[in-house]
Length: 133
Ligand SMILES: [Zn+2]
Ligand SMILES: [Zn+2]
Image 1 (spheres, rainbow, N blue to C red):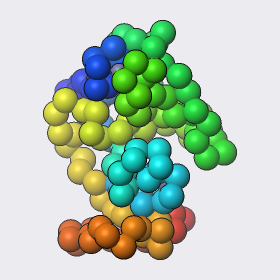
Image 2 (cartoon, helix red, strand yellow; image 1 turned 120 degrees about the horizontal axis):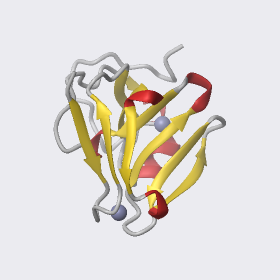
Image 3 (tube, rainbow, N blue to C red; image 1 turned 90 degrees about the horizontal axis):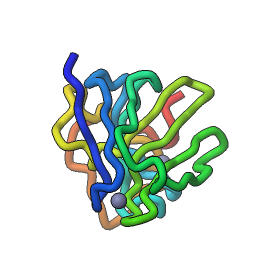
C-alpha cells in the first residue's frame, strides 16, 4: 500500500500515513466547527501504527478534544493536523492537510443536527443526526 504525506500550513510539521483509512467522514459538531473555523471538519482515521510523524514534534501542541482524544496543532501556523484516540489505537488526520487524496473518500456526515444553516449538504452520503453508533 502506498504512503501519503501531509503537512501543516507553514511546513514545520510533516507526517506520513499508510493509505489505509479505516474511516473518513465529515463532522458538523460545534466542537469541530470551532476547532477548524469551518462549517465542518473532514477527517479520516488510520491505525496508530500507520501514522508516522516525520518532523516538527517540537512545534506541536496538543489540546484535549472530547474525552479521549489528543488533538495536535502546529504552534507556528496553528494548523490542526492530527489527533490520537489511544482507546481505539487510532490516529485521525485532518484530510485537508494531506498532499494527495486518500483512496477512501469521506463516507458520511455526522452530528448534522448541529450543522450551520448557511451550509447545504449537496452530496448523497448518509447523514447521521448524532454520532454513528
Ligand atoms: Zn505549521
Ligand atoms: Zn466533530
